[in-house]
Amino acid sequence: MRFLALWFLVFITACTALPEPIPASIPVQKQLYTHSQVRCLDLLTDFKRTVQAQGVQDAQLVWDPRFPHLAFDRFSLAMLPELSARADQQQWLNYVAHQAMTQRQTEYLNLPRKAGYQAQALELCAAQLVHRSLGNPAFWSELMGNPPEFPSDYVIWQRVLGVYPVSQFVARPSIDNEKRRLISHFIQPVDGYAIRYAMHDKPSLTQSQIRQWFQQAGRQSALAWPVLTEAQQQRLLQYYAPVFQVETRSRDDFPGQVKFVTTSQPTLITRKPTVYTHVSYTRFYGQTLMQLNYSLWFANRTARSSFDPYAGPFDGVLIRLTLDPVGQPLILDSIHHCGCYHMVFALSPKLEFASLDNAVEWPILQKIYPGKATEHLEVTLTHGEHMIKDVHWLSSDEPAARSLTVLAYQQLQSLPTPENHHQSLFDQQGMLVESVRAERFYLWPFGIQSPGTQRQIGHHATAFIGQRHFDAPFLFETLFQKP
Image 1 (cartoon, one colour):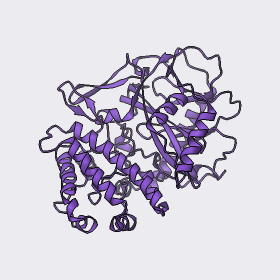
Image 2: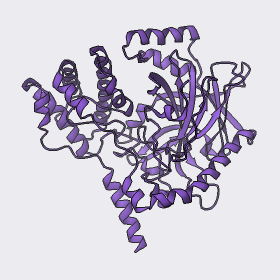
Image 3: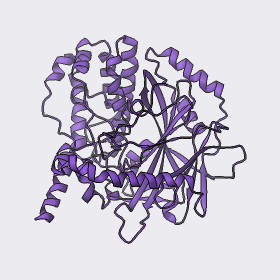
Image 4: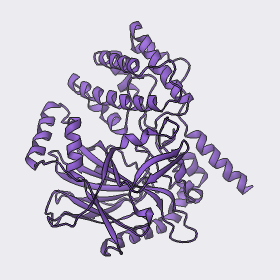
């Protein structure tokens, strides 16, 4: 009976997390758009139905059938209450339209059977709807009154079934012990052989140039939102990229490039050290801050014993550098791509951590700003588990490092296969199914679907006790006092 109950649990969990089917008719579209826009509405909506039917819907962003030309992350939805002026609406609309275009292009590329759809026609229709939405009062009224909802990555019925009010107290001592173990790494020297990796050919930027970019972006935005050009973003990502030092004992410790060896089997090419990058935004006490994201992927998390429920195929570490309003490093934080092991490092003496509230599990909190010598950081990872064990400012006489190939994180969402198709590393729930862990069988009462499984941006629940998402737009306001 216990075996059957377990399989029932796994089956229900998988089913409840699938994308919600698009209804056959969407009456509210007729209230929001003119008759001349129906053809484009139908084209974009039908395309999404086809994407769902062929199982290639991208999970990183929320798509709402009322607004088929847009796609939303948690940050953009949090910005909605601040859109009072037309200029605010224009900037916000450009952002969510660009997100939708990126998602649509990914899904089109991954679509096995494209008959009936042309990429250019989809983009022309989307651009037309975006242009006409700006001055459409009905559109804004519906959007503000009934905004799209980004789904939580916590499954409440699992917490109910797992008696969460009791489970959290049973688990807290183990969680606290694990945090103490990870903190103890910070006082230990590098264990054995270590390899350093870095982006070579960094752009010749100056702090004065960066400050000018951010000040100009702030002046051009009524929301003081630092939206830089794509070229400026890429230069910043390269300029601020940390040096990564990895303790190395086996091939599991080589950061590599993700490839598909068959349509259903991704692997890691360790002879190509690679970092995947993207830009995101967060809110911090009335300001919008830019975040530079760096992802490393490893072939495995190495087992520490004959039975290690946390070990298995694929392991990913995401390092995120949040810049202040003039483009200076402010906060560095990190998770594994399962959402686990959230660590937060204050980089400015102006920052003070907030008072602890035990109702929610806290990340590991550290301050590393004393002794800053440059604007560049080095992050050291342990062997096997790939935990952060040190973060420090680089000096001018650091040893040589191996070169990292730089790729956009978006490429993970559409990788070529040997059969001349494209496929996302993640499924329609944002999961890397090849990375499932045994820990999921006893950590499910905390409401996180398949704990330990590596997953896509937008789906990183970071706390077993309480609820917290890595991309929560006001995350740092819960962790830091107002400067």
